[in-house]
Image (cartoon, rainbow, N blue to C red; front, side, top):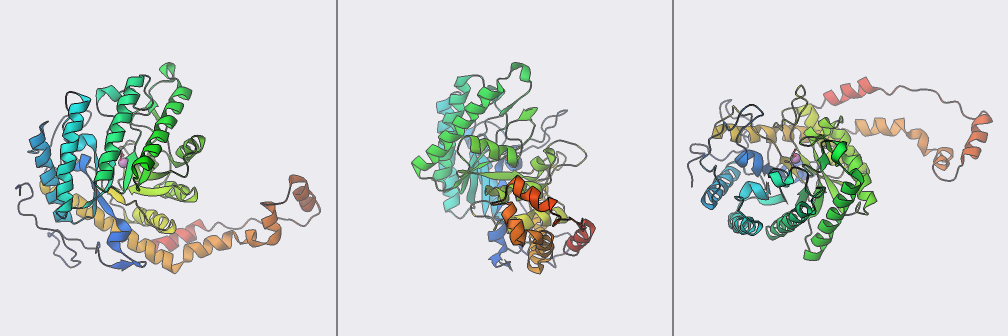
Length: 434
Ligand code: XUL
Ligand code: CO
């Protein structure tokens, strides 16, 4: 045992806990909601990078957090893992996630980094076997080190492409070894700063080939988890290729991978792309590529990716409504890709942030399930599209041609009458539940 979380006991469900006591007031893992345990619906995961590796810097200042495990040795990496699993025990969440770079120190060669990584993976494996949470997903950090400054798969230098491919191979192997449920690719620097030095067509082909190799390798080793792409429109690069769900779908179609890859949709990334979170979720569901979510919001005034813990129940309700409509998570889950504010220095801040976020999501899920059960939105939607149930309307989408349609409209049988979209009435309806 380390003493990092000294004095903080495992958090339990207690809706009547005194105000100053840490407790889940809404998240009750075993409670049945819409036919399933809440834990199985929400499938919460802690993100290793923000919780244990992020030092609290911003563009004007460096490290604010002082953590006893900060440093580049294997002993410190093991200490970091010890503290992480102590936090998991306090929270009791079922999953966690990592990048390779979060859990192991960088070595002075590829082979040395690989050795460090494999040693830590075995260390994590031991802790998972001893009762720790399962791995929701693993991923490679192909954006922090300076070798990736011009991209990974889309780098103009084929040696960086090769380094990245080799890194991803090892990360998929490790994810597979730990029984991970998904493997994520976020194209951190797969994009460009200026077209003046960029061959955009070539970079697309490189990214397509890279992803095909990932999918081939997954099948070769028998990894049953999903491959997930996490769209983001910009930051760190000015323009990123995986802009949003629709853009990624076009890319998957181009390279014949639409049946192989699903989406990890992040709330903050959706907002950066000029969408709502629920728009991205509904789009992925409509395209049959919904996978998992990163449940972290942005500050709406800042205009960049602030990765804050969720705190808005109505937003969470609309998001989980889409998740429920999509049939819920299969391999996916709710990952808190969220970091503390840099002034939130204390171990207690880290625990409280996750506890509050889990309660917000639980409230969102419960509201979404009640709304779904009530059925008001689906009834209104069905009524709005009821005209399409008519035989004549169905043939518009199957056998009719423009000439046939024109003849029908010209003969006077069609006279469209505008009808209210009832947005305010539907907004009033939703607010009854949230
Ligand atoms: C960055 C981001 C990443 C991915 C994993 O904005 O969301 O943390 O989730 O690489
Ligand atoms: Co993310």
